[in-house]
Each structure stands twice: as structure tokens, then as C-alpha cells.
Amino acid sequence: MAVSDEELMRQVQAGRHAAFETLVARYRPVLVRVAVSKLGDRALGEDAAQETLLAVFAARHTFNPRYSFRTWLWTILLHLCAQQWKRQQSSDRCGGVIDPQVADATANNAETALDALLRTERSDLLQRALLELPEPQADALRLRFFAGLTFDEVAAAMSSSVSGAKQRVKHGLERLAHRLRTLQGVEP
Amino acid sequence: MNCDHAFELITDPVGSGSPTLQRHLERCPRCRQMQQTLAPALDWLMAAEPALSPGSSSRGEAPFLSAQAVLVAEQVARSLPRRCDRGWGESLCRGAAIAAVAALGVLFGALLLEPKSPEKPATSAGTLTACLWEQQQLLDQLPDTSARGVVVSCVMCHVPRTVQ
Image (cartoon, rainbow over all chains, first blue to last red; front, side):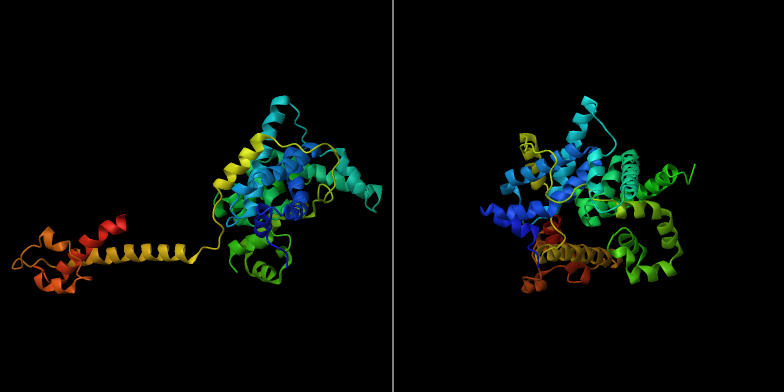
């Protein structure tokens, strides 16, 4: 049975820093995934995920293991992404599409170039549609689907009620479904 | 399974194929309609590729950590909500508070319904401050020994504690 996040944090707080590597391995991929989707830029997303993990380590003694580590982690990421987003807006670096390196990564798989192209296009469309959503709805969708959080965890990370988190996901899905149909040319 | 639980499973990549959900969808036209409406978004989100493989990094730059990020982490740590597993203490407190409110409601209801008897003297504030539950010998000295008198005595004693 896997050691809980909170137990790993207890070990980190006790000075067994190797336990933090387990947490990094556990969460870095999903943190990057959500951050890249939110910021629309692979490099910035990696930076945000990296900074989140470093901040967790630096502030490890302020964390109380009786509380949820996941909530702490995702709340930090959302805050840092929001700060990064503001910096992006001010420096007019907003991209809105996924970096071509994502396409390279998918193309490395044993699939045809056409498959990779279609996959990239699909990912690009989804990314654009997510960026067009109101931020709370898009964040709730990212946390639910990319990070795999429960509604309780989404609510805690976004400082909302559980029913509020469900409403955000539901309305986000409705708008996203409509937008994707439009982008695909199914609806006008 | 209710519709709320069904929505949780519909939006859960693992649970979306569960037989329980399928049975609910067969019986519930509203959830079935919702699933069909959301299907394009659900399909795309659940099939979306991870941004990169675990542990890979394309940058190769030194890790960067701002003081602001640490501050954010510390602030969030201080304001974390407690996890869902409520302790016995919290449950007992909530139960006690609910019971106290319910008891007060009953007491005040009894007060309102009790007919006033003019032959009995009105209770004085001095005699009502003693707790008849703790000092039952005082019952003989209570000017108003009717149910109303006892209720007023209890209310006088316990209302301030409950409010606190």
C-alpha cells in the first residue's frame, strides 16, 4: 500500500528528504500538465510546477500533516499560475496554444505521423477551448480531469463549496462541449 | 445512486464506465440527457494526452524559487481546511449544540403553552438562578413548582452557557 502524502510530508519534516522525491515523482507530471494547460506555454508551465514543488519544500515546516497535502499543493499551484498569468499579461507573452514540443513528445510514440498530427490538433483545439472558458470553470475542469482531484479536493483548492465546484465543472463542460462542436464544425 | 453521485461518476475517468452508473442512466432520462450533452467535452478531456512524461524536463535550467512563492505556500498552509474525516470531538460538539438548541425550543414552547395560574406567585429572579438539576433539594423552596417554574429555572441557568 502506498504511503500517504501526509506521512511522506511528516518524514520530510523530520529531515528524511528522500521522501520528498516520492512526492515529486507522484505529483510533478500532473502539476506540469495542469500548469501547461492553464498558462498555454510548456516552459512556463514547467516553471510553475517546479516552483510549486520547491515552495512546498521550502515551507515544509508550516504544513500540518493533519490537513490535506493535495489541497495545499494544488492551491499553491493555482496561486503561482495566477501570478505568472498576470506577469504574462503585462509582458504580452500570452501564447494560447501548446508549444510545438508537445507535438514532438507525442510523435516519439510508435504511431504514424498522421496520428500524431491529429492528436496534436485535438490537443490544440482543447487547449484553445479551455482558454476561452471563464477561469474558475477552466481551473475546475483541469483539476478534475487533468489532476484527477475529487470534487471535495477541487472545492478545497479553489476555496469554494463542493456544490460550487460541481457547478463550475458542469457549466464548464457545457460550454466546452458547445465550443468543441463549433470548432469541429458540427454546430454554427 | 442519486443524480448527484451519477454526475460524479460521469466526470470520473475511472468511474464513468461503472455498471452502477449505466443502470442509473438507463432509468434516469435527465442524467442520460446531460451525459449526451457533455459527451464531446468529456471525451476530449478524458482522452487528452499528458503534457510530458514523468521526470522529463526540456529546460535544463537551474530550479527557480521566489520568496513570493514560499510566502504563498506558508499562507496557504495556515488557511488549509481540515480534512473530511471529522473527529469525535467535533461530532460531539455539533451534536451537543443541536441537542441544546432543540431542548431550548421545547422549553420555550412549553413556556408559551403553559396556562398562567394567578394564584401562584410569580417567580423571582433570585430563586431561578439555582440549577434544580444539580441541587434538587431546592425544588421544595421554589416558589413556582409547576412545570413552567421548573422550565424557567432551567432556561435561566442554561441559556447563558449555550449562548457562550
